[in-house]
Length: 127
Image (cartoon, rainbow, N blue to C red; front, side, top):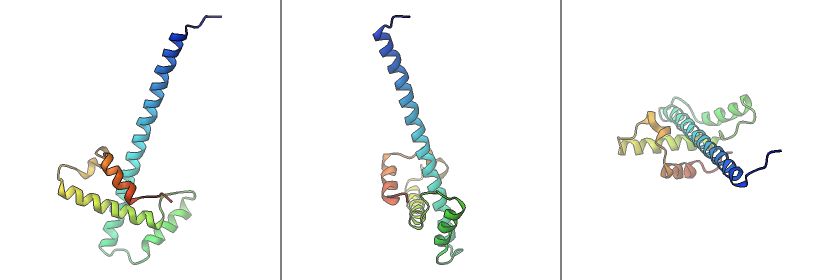
């Protein structure tokens, strides 16, 4: 049996643990960016169809209901959240207009803490 050097063991565990935690943090960040990009895209689609009157009253309700039927267990696409996604897109678009250096295509890469706070306000609870 090999005698363990506690300092070496402790150091090895710390290095591996740090790598695991950093990887988990990066993965979480990527998931959050992808989710926000999805909300933005869904919001844009809903906005373009509701604001131009392509869809009538109750259409968002029907979308939410149909999504629940076709994707059982799907969460986050209630009527309220779909409307919040539309609001999120429209509010972000206003920010883009005010600050032309932000590009829509780069949305997921430019999210900072301030924008995350806006998202928390606009999409308070994923149902």
